[in-house]
Length: 392
Image 1 (cartoon, rainbow, N blue to C red):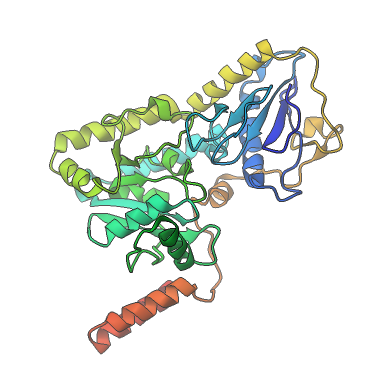
Image 2: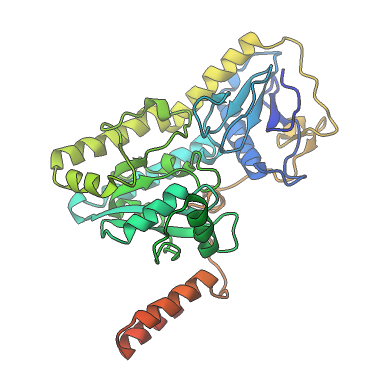
């Protein structure tokens, strides 16, 4: 059985399906603490769905690594990961916490499918949509922003920042670190696009994550909009990537070919149809809610057959649970999640919470000044100012 260590946290599943964590990562504000509780929410739902398949009188356990880059060392017990920056890293890949509970995931995608079916292919924007944060690992994202300065095919932009005080400071740091010239508009904050509006676009783009350049949960949300999925060339991987086929389910792109690739697809209606059908078929075969449960079932059954019959030694002083059936033996985790659909969407960042009026972001003010100075008439400058006031 798993024994506590610094990276990740041991997860124990009791014979009754209850879930125990070796430590509460929120208490020490460890990286991955919110992922730990999202993973707990997912695992509790999976455990309930698999109750009849769980072994009687047997505990199962593993070490769960929540960092995007993945595990760094081999361990003498089962180790699982939600993603790996490089495929050779140790650990078995499992669905990341941002799939949520399978029932929520199923409902969420039904909404996206319904929205997409209302939008004909002919009326969709012939553009590539991408939104994401700027962060220490966002080199590919900066490369994309630079390309967008020269092409009307790309509707892309940063919507936030991770690890820096502003988008501008993030862009400056990336440009210096990688010796890349940042285009003047690279740091401009782009408007949020709700996922139900992704199907207004013909092309949806996925890039490596902002924090470390590893996996990004963005990709799992792109398959049910009836659009063509583009994936930036990268080494990061998740549990389902090995089933992806370039040219059948998606198209791989990079800074050197993204514009030419989209232009070529635009000129080939038959290819468009194949890629759209391939994306949806991939979701049905590998990412639909029953498939997530199947993945967990296979792993839990394998652990039950191979792990020690004796119960694991759990340190009650540091362990926690969100399961009421185990609350008399283990203390409650500090931030257990019990979220309804809308709350889940807010927590995942899929929906933007309504905000009170705020002071303008420094990046927005810089952009306003630049746009006003670029205006060639007084009326144009006034229009820029009115648009800025309306957005803020």
